[in-house]
Length: 165
Length: 411
Image (tube, rainbow over all chains, first blue to last red; front, side, top):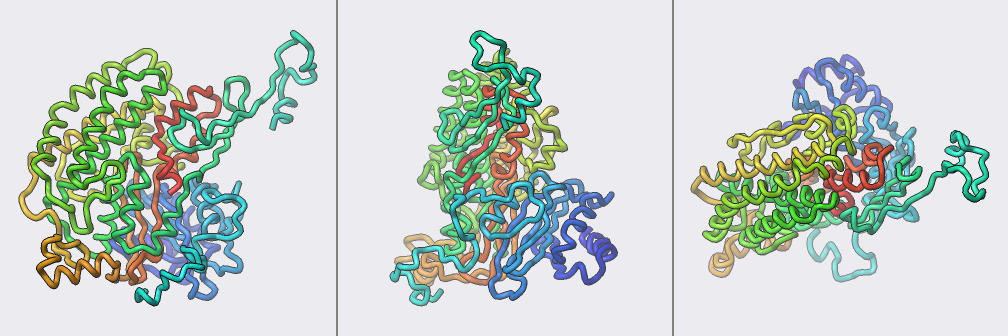
């Protein structure tokens, strides 16, 4: 099944549009460009065989070292009929972390995208209500980004170097 | 909001202040929560009401957000277990073991059969507690307190089994990477056997009081229903999805921890309303008992944990008398063991749906990114759609039957 999905995706979006193909503990993953996300998810949703019609999860992720591709979104699709899971990943620069919304296709993406916005500052264009969800509205930063330290910066008893971290 | 409604209203233009005049259709705002005795957790719903009918609802969540995903990025793997049992605290062992299985997948640890069966038993006991709480509280919300007391003592009894297995009751921190922390003690086995023998009678008593009770049926049938299409679109999982008629159960579709060895049915509903959700949970309790019975009958002999010295804490006696054990003990406790690079997703059938752990490891001692797929967070957003057009009392029972756990929703 995984090979068929890759073949169909490459036929539809070209070899350049689908890369980073891999399999991790049984789950297929592909990387694509931001502009391909909605067409690709729609293609997989409407495909007569694959039927990826269940959005299991949507996770933001931050790689500070990957210049120009700092912020990513992982779409976790599940085809309940075939019992196949698929990760679609896309990355955008941190200066303009704009992703298209998929709330038009999945109602469940609403809060998931709000969560990714809340914690990573990823902007989902076209989202009906892109506001913070778990944190307070007054917060002026996105706490899951790697540059925000977890613990109080004034503490000196937990310096990473002392613990070999 | 109220202005638009007034324009559409046939009564527009009538003088509201006129004494004894005709009824004026005016919308009012009602704050349900954040702390309300009927919402079982800290949820805020700002309802727009037309008389007693709900026109719209706006949710606010996050009142008990504790930044678990951020904290997890600084903790060694074994310390994250204690975060997971604070998510869905009604079925904490499922969360613990789901997390353990995720890490075992990343590390490639093979868990012995006995430990897998023990996990199944503990997870099904946790499912029993979760469903006992949800269903009996649903009955309480419709005004029936008696049934609640009949089954709640058995939840208490299951907590005693937890105590026997891990020393804790609510936030269990049960098991370890590679298996269980300790074998079943004779007391634990005796208690599980007692539960299997005596819980069915209490369950039957509860069902006799509630299930075909006219008042209960009137309060729950055709209340808060959702179609299978909408439920799937909203990412429903667990009993709520099955009540809508979709037979998706992680235990049968992607079996983990030897669930493929057991015979059990996946109950489904037809309408997806509150009554169906209640019935699905009732039937799941019987199926859980069936699974526990099978696991107890066929409990294999052998070790109760994997031989994974890098991750499994050695016996305390060995730590004092064995150099190797002391080294591993120190390294594990100090969190000085690197995990392999990889990306893993593992999901278990939690008390209220598919509980997933998406773990990205960069080869360090802590996760690079850990995303919890919390079923409650995902399906609670359908709540306004489910209660639109119903009354306030219907909204209360709908919320109760959805089994939304605030700790899980807010992480």
